[in-house]
Length: 343
Image (tube, rainbow, N blue to C red; front, side, top):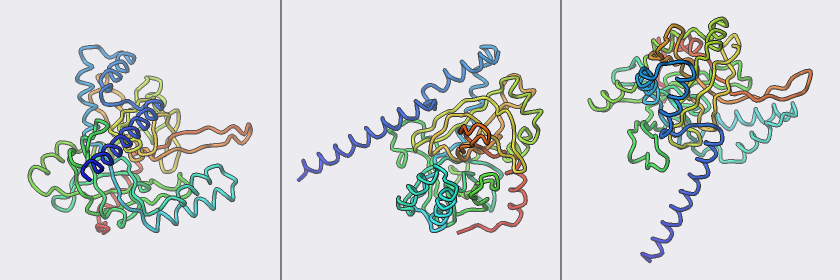
């Protein structure tokens, strides 16, 4: 009996390892960079934008702050709201003859009550005593029901790591506020603000060290000003995102500033590499005037991709999309004043 158990365990471990290798290859093909290569890729990027070699290590250490604030968000259940959402989308796409209908039907065929993974970012200030805030997409954690049993994991940077037992984890206590995902992506900010709690002084110190200040993120102005966007693009200011694609260890994505912004809710299109699971990743950038790349701001919350058909040529272009933190910040300030915890 013992040998049979050993064989089954070994077989399952082999299958799991094979799956990780397949997902890792998929992430590499998309251009998502593993942690072992972050410094080399970032160094090459900084050299291309003209930063002196002796200043690159400080710039790299500065950008690692965002990686420390980034976490894997793991949800162990779905909710009826999610099922209804995919039913509405499937009907909408069927009526339009949109190819996305197949994806929505796949979501419906899959047990909507199953779990999922995404990316989050630890922000401050704290709220309600010892509670801290993690922002992710609403379509990652859609309701208070889905928040029950959800956890966030920090420091998951190597594939194959038993992150559930090795990485620092915090259970989600509830949702403070949300901007619900809608059928039209331009009508929603698509975020959920999760509450996690420091249970002791060690937790408190860890979260304080890893959090990104809300005052920094809320003050981002680039998305609201096309001139600033154009300047950043002409100066080849890079955009960087940390995320957990496909539930893998953290990856870095690098790209240029988008060419334009969309209003009124401050959405942008971008071309940073991403996959399922990157949802909730934050795009960070070094603002104008920071010639040494030491001050990295959280500028945009990535939420997925859209396909847009040219009305004249009929060509279809695919873009990744994100919403600007200025829009999120304005919304959050109003909500944080009196929002109860959603249990």
